[in-house]
Length: 225
Picture 1 (cartoon, rainbow, N blue to C red):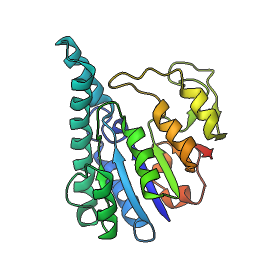
Picture 2 (picture 1 turned 180 degrees about the vertical axis):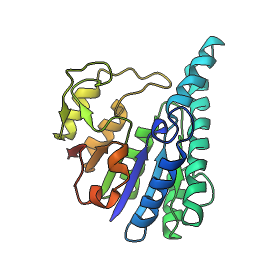
Picture 3 (picture 1 turned 60 degrees about the vertical axis):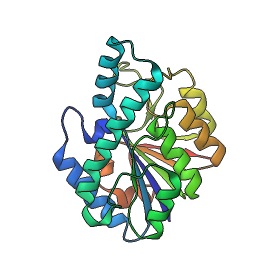
Picture 4 (picture 1 turned 90 degrees about the vertical axis):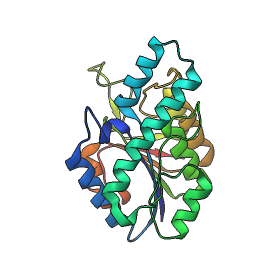
């Protein structure tokens, strides 16, 4: 099976790098890669949003701020490459062809952001589409897709299963500026819908038992084509 993992920056680096979690997920990814072809996209998270906020104070435009965020995603990707050791392709992959070539070499490609206007959610969905992946696994600091942001609305309810088009409708109200943070951004949701990619959205606890997750045993959300 070919699997793309979309790992949120705030999962790896909530305030500072979560060393134990990075070690744990690197171990899980390494074990999964023994039986499956995998590729990884890493986000910028809170650190990227903080940098983008400061750049706004200097009246930086949205494209400039996107590039700034991309640099942070690639720094986070390098941390994961270090943890994956020799199983990883040795540098941050910057395009999908290079990711494909890394897989042919039996290495794990790790990407950050690629182009302004594309969040790493969108990059992971596009990568999954490009590679013809069987599964996309989104790892976030929220344990699934909710009817609203559970960190702000205590009445928000988790959705255990949904169709991709329902996801598109749910996230379509989200803002799209540099550093925007939603469970999955609208462009990524549209790519998931058009490509028919089965997708799981899970939290940090499930991320440390990836063999169960791959079999569909998780506490997050399953998004069906």
